[in-house]
Amino acid sequence: MNWILTYTGRRFDLLEPTAAMISPGDIAHALARICRFNGHSRTHYSVAQHSCIVADLVPQADQLAALLHDATEAYVGDMVRPLKDVMPEYREIEHRVWLAICDRFLLDPILPASVKHADLVALATERRDLMPHHHAEWLCLTGIHPHADKIRPWSAEEAGIHYFRRLMDLMQTAHRGRAA
Image (cartoon, rainbow, N blue to C red):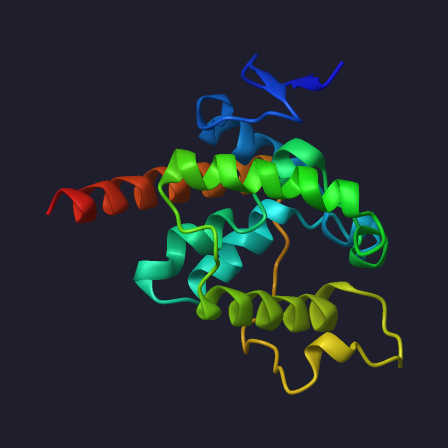
């Protein structure tokens, strides 16, 4: 069996995903319930909230890509980076899902530099506000400063609502922009 059943009742083929299988409702629901850092944060903090924060940190033109930058996790789950780095098959499946998401939302598969930077700023902020204190340096954060605002984690329900509304708004904005 190569498929999963999604929140909205869709059959999602993990090996041959298509844009038609992608649902904004599925993405919002799942990301709101997936905890960042494999659940090792001090409190539940969702991928959906992380994505909203990243979208807040980029120019308007890049906000849809920022909001969706971790959307693959709605279908393949979140895997900690050290494990992901040694699993090429996972990376290949995740990439196929990303391409289907890009097709569904008419995104360029290559993330803008602003999204990559904002993702790191969010990570630095999350480390400061949500993770247990540890002296070890995170090399990926060298030269990156946390955002001034402190993170107040949302419940899964709040995260799902905020994420879904933001996605719908950004989809309308993007559609209007393409029509003009």
